[in-house]
Length: 65
Image (cartoon, rainbow, N blue to C red; front, side, top):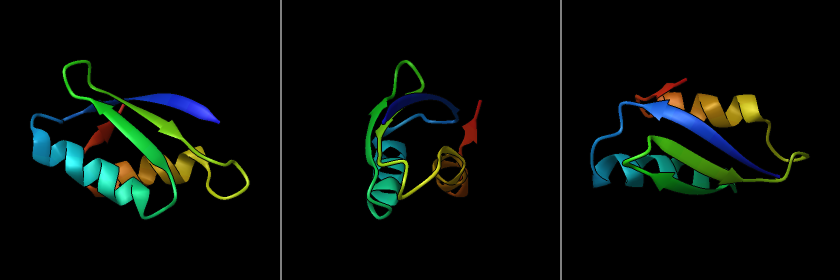
């Protein structure tokens, strides 16, 4: 499944690396669009939920809208 999440608080490449790296550890492909404030994720629903993905992003210090 592919989904796009609005995320507040991202401002630099470190933010991108933080989110993409944390999600990669959970077998989620993530592509951060920094100017738009969006994260597009690709994942298998039987392995992780959208709630877990959002929690992972928030654990990195960002706000999921």
